[in-house]
Image (cartoon, rainbow, N blue to C red; front, side, top):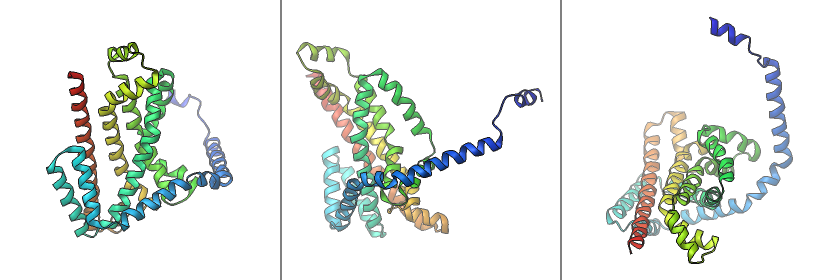
Length: 299
């Protein structure tokens, strides 16, 4: 009772004032969306064109050729025949159960989102590693991005850009980009200072030290960040389907609303299969890169 009486004496916003503030902010954002929404949307037209082209390419490519390419990439990254066999079997089962087209749509979204996350995230991670001030500014933003519920990302994006592929891509990128930024920063900061001093002693410039020493040595850690980005992007697929992103997420969403257990289970397992394939391939590549760098260091 004492705590309750104490709290009642603390100044609080009146409910009417709080409602007024919310309405003001909502109105301001709506006005901003009406005024600049089309301009901002036009900025993403090249990304939308690339995404549509890539999706059509995957859908038009014969299934056997897609499997050969994916299996070949898996072998080049891992040098593991077990992983290659697993990839082939997984894609055969996906096609056998009639989920091929949705899987290709999901792959196009995930690969484009991961590519954008890498293009945006690695330079930010490098900037954080090179400046404590930049790190101090970016870290709280990453904390907010990682702790904010995924559904919340959809609200401002949909209000600004409406329903479609681009809002979904933006939401997925925002949700998935923090790991690659954090681990790029961490990987570069963990590079041995003695190695950096040796490179400086040989007359290497700042850019030469970054590209020739820090990035190669940090690559296993950066690949771990890319791996986590891919996993987070895949976990966002079902949520992104709520705003019109086609793929494996839409049947899962349909199964939830209509209680179709088998439909949701099969498409969920297809998402799991993609997640395992991407995870194993990226982890195997990171381990090979680490062994390679270790061999160079020992040499």
